Amino acid sequence: MRKYFIDNLRWMDVLLLIPYHAAQAFNTWGEPYFVFFEPNKAISSLIVFFSPFFMPLLFLLAGMSTRYALGKRTYKQYIAERVKRLLIPFVFGTLAFCPVLSYTGDITNSGYEGSLASHYKIFFTRWTDLSGFDGGFGVGQFWFLYFLFIISLVSIGVIAAVNKISGGRSTGKSVPFPVICLFVIPLPFLYDLLSIGGKSFAEYTYVFLIGYFIMADDRVIDKAAEYKFLTMVAGLAASILNVYMFIWSGRDFGVLNTAAKAFSEWFMILALIGAGKSFLDYNNKVSSYMSQRSFPYFSIHFLWTVLFQYLLADALRGSLILLYFVPVISALAATFICAEICIRVPFLCFLTGTKRRQKAS
Image (tube, rainbow, N blue to C red; front, side, top):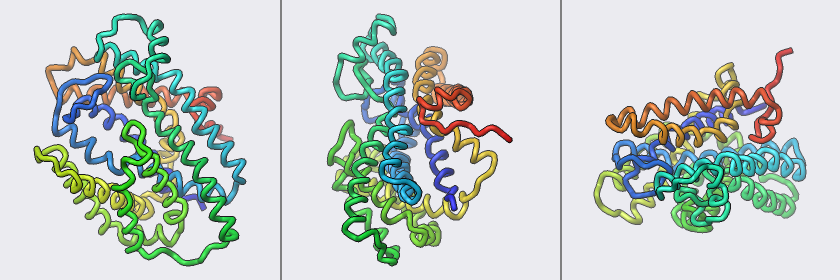
């Protein structure tokens, strides 16, 4: 039976991307961005609150989905599906959308005065940190796709090896919930391991494999649902503490801040899996609509977010509230319109890794 709470958690997570990325234009820690306005602690708190867990949750859900997918597909079929759903959208998005983001960053951060057409040469020849903020080559939000593609391939090797050693047999035992809670311990040691652009292959591979080997077990899911309020309290407390230490305290807490981030990441993931199982395991018109559009939404959202911030900056600069919310609302509308067009055009579905809309019989 399909676990609809996984689909629902995924599209709800992806929906956060526009307000999350828009908030980066107000960060207080000096990180460059395509369009930067002014530092603001309240808006920056949104980033710091969600950042520990909202992308790791997607990797864990991908690991769980891989477990279910390999119950119906061979390794070869699974890899072919990963190429179609991840690699092709990564290449398309990087070539189609990222040059525009990089062009915008070059204008606002480096004073570039040339045309978009002439900037393509700069995009493909200026290699710095892969962010694109300085006008160089960047992959934008599509880092998630190439990370997940590589992690999927690596994990298939791990899974095949484990299955060969075990003979494909399961122990039949469920992992005790206190042991599941202890999976937080390695996280602080993984954050800087195999890191590219501040994103750790080691961390996300670890979370993906936990999703596959541990969290995909129905008994573990039921335990997460049973203890969801406890893990939610722990996760929220760690998240709030993380925000306070990083944004509001005015001090460098070092290891303590890293520990709070790790506890926020793991216990919020457990809480969301438990809450998802309890409250989101359903399929209706809204959830079906959002799930189908989550892939094109992911591909298109960042472009519209940055463009509206760039185009509306001068008109809205007098009001902080409008400067944040108007581009967010505009980007949401434009992204959903584009997603609606995308699911109706088979070629665009192919380029964005979107399953084609089923016609009513």
